[in-house]
Length: 372
Image (cartoon, rainbow, N blue to C red; front, side, top):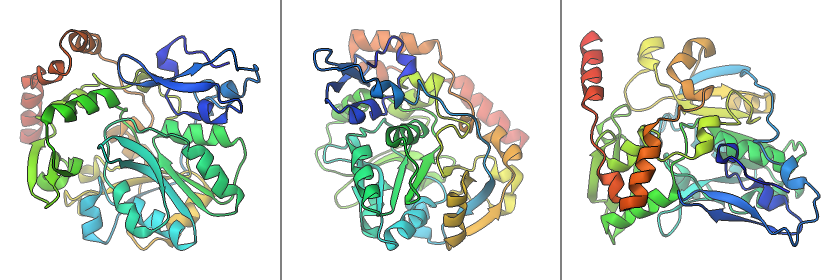
């Protein structure tokens, strides 16, 4: 049976829960708000399937992409609504146009992040934009498997560990499956997100953007609007307390410091990321409205990319990754993380609001701008 002795070795992908034929595994929230599997030993028959589908216990080999691109959606509205270049939408639209279904992360009615399935292009809007909190996968691996066995095309998107969990859960290759991973800095605690949102006491939330481009792609903001599209709150990322904790790695899941799925180990067909460093490598493409870095990892991914009507340019992987270290390197675990959680246990969500802006970082940014 699956046993978690070290929380750095569980990414919370939910593959073990969904694979268990006896339904004796449940996900339980720990004191930090992350979900971990708990086995009812009275029902367990020691089939070890839960261990066999665990992406942390069964890591794949590292693999470099077969092609890389800089790309952006030619639809400016969709690009504006997206975190980077808006490439996920045309990929998903091509699958739906072929009678397929698309899985991705969206907000639920309580503004918590969950994985869900859609079958129309109009519904894809809910998947656009970064959600800086770990999503609840639920039973979406099982749902996707049903569609796959019926012969329908399936696009499953998520963080690298979720994509890895999906592949391990299936344990078979499907020609009608396309997986798209979003390069991940790490997933913050759903509990911290839940309590942060509750502390704001807004009753008329119509939309939330963790990465609003109102001040540009690089200097993005956290924005909440009401149902009439009026701004209730907008703060630059460096000043918003929730994003501040995220950026300092204080609220990330422990496994994010020991990621089992980077460097192509997730087996995703396509990898999507912000093209940080574009102003240095391909300045002619930089308009500060967002551009995507795309890694094509399989021939199936290459086939999809060749079908898209987007602005695209071949890019160099080795030149790009120094600006995008999250593609191949786990986030560093800061010593301050322990202090933050100790403060949280003592004073609750006020520990988040007690965080101070690091003046040293501001000085560094000013110096970098002067140098440029």
